[in-house]
Length: 279
Image 1 (cartoon, rainbow, N blue to C red):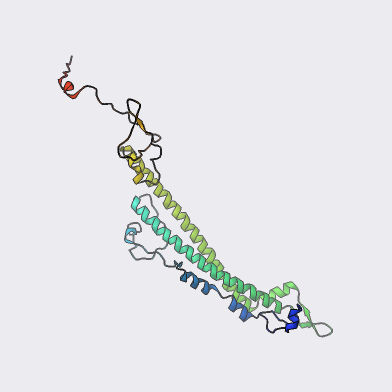
Image 2: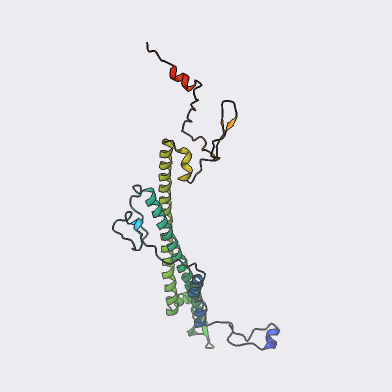
């Protein structure tokens, strides 16, 4: 914003010689203070998820020593292969909430870091410019001489105003990097749990198939075994409906198709009169 306005006729003619567009430090830092406004807007949108997840009763057996209501710290149980399918599902839900919480913190710090970066760049430019001329080193006419680029940089880095904003930015930048690493760990932990859930599902599926309940697997698996149904043929070559109108599971690799047992053509009463003579 200009500190003084040029005459209207000067502006109309494209002249801005009398306009000072330079902003001072206080005004610049006030304009670049926007992190709180951003987070307030997020809250109004109903998107804030800053609440840390807590342990529920279903998690107490998974984390010995922790009780329902305790704040979750994001640690993965040392041995998850001993957990049941239901426990793994509860653990995955907990880690989903934990990952969402960590990512919320990542983006909140990212906003604050962006604010600090803008303030740092502004103060750096203003302070470095102030050290452009050396009042202690003048020419023959008494005018101060210009400092070299490296000398200007060194003096600016020692200025307390720049040190303040630079330290704030580095603090937030370090926190941001740390939270990003935590989010990566949480994401990898979720993949570990997801793999274990898949393993448990596969074991359950194989057990059901071993017991002859392969056609019921659609109720316990995400994969469908109901897409490859082939209508069975009767003795006269016609297709036979299964009766319930629902498709039946197709052949599964590694599982032998049971041989259909045909009904005896001998009437029941006739079979009753048959006598088997042992030699």
